[in-house]
Image (cartoon, rainbow, N blue to C red; front, side):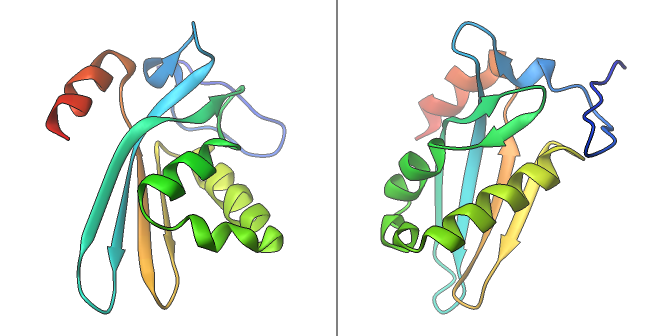
Length: 122
């Protein structure tokens, strides 16, 4: 297995299978679980930028909107903190997990060739 090395983190996987090189993006499935009800919301899309490693940038807005969480992004400090934490975790493995008192979020990279199959399930 080859891997890309970033100056800020050692990398333990190759992001190439998840990368759409034509669009310079990476597909992922985002799952939110609300703690008070147990309700689960899922969306799949090309929300990540393909830099040397997956990076969350403007795709956070589209994913948050589709998950009914767009109102949370009005807090710029939170917006930046979430993006940085997701980037940190995705530099180490093809999955990121976040939690707060209201909900938990899991982001799983989707192999690029399988992205159409994920879309058909929605």
